[in-house]
Amino acid sequence: MFLCAGNSESFDFALPIGVGLVEAAINLTRLAAMEAPEFLLFVGTAGSYGNHKLFDIIESKTAANVEQGFLTGTAYTPINNVVSASEDVSRETIVNSSNYITTSEEMARRYLEKRLELENMEFFSVLAVAKSFGIPAGGVFCVSNYCNESAHEDFLKNQSEAMKRLEEYLRDKGTLK
Image 1 (cartoon, rainbow, N blue to C red):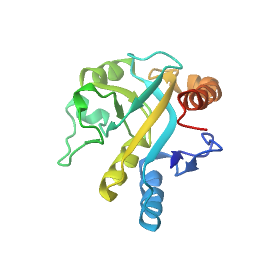
Image 2 (cartoon, helix red, strand yellow; image 1 turned 180 degrees about the horizontal axis):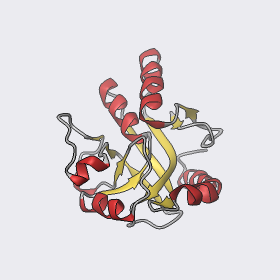
Image 3 (cartoon, helix red, strand yellow; image 1 turned 45 degrees about the vertical axis):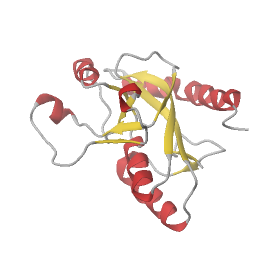
Image 4 (tube, rainbow, N blue to C red; image 1 turned 90 degrees about the horizontal axis):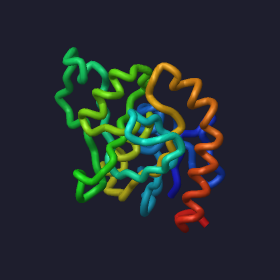
């Protein structure tokens, strides 16, 4: 089953589950409880902390929920903040999820130091819910912007092209028919 965030990031072939960690978790939990899909594939755009270029396509099965307070040493979490559907996490591109968009290049560098490479608001929730229900899952992302002071403007400017390239990638790969 294909999933996407929704709102301005909807695809004809994917079910929208909501924007951000909370909406995605609530709606996907409801779906998984009603009908257990065989596989979940989340598709969407992502911001790059710097290692990936605009319009790169990245597949991942690992997500984190790391907030900036963790990076600055002003906050901690007692819960596991990384979830993976991969057998080999060391080879994974880790996608960080937060309800906030990073606009600081300094913070983006700090995320990279922690092996976090991309930012997508929903992916952590998708993998956490999938793991809870025992459903295999993954994600495919197209980079729409860098995580810097112009992140939002660049996202708006590049989102349409990123979505188009993502759909073409899925069709070319045979994942989407």
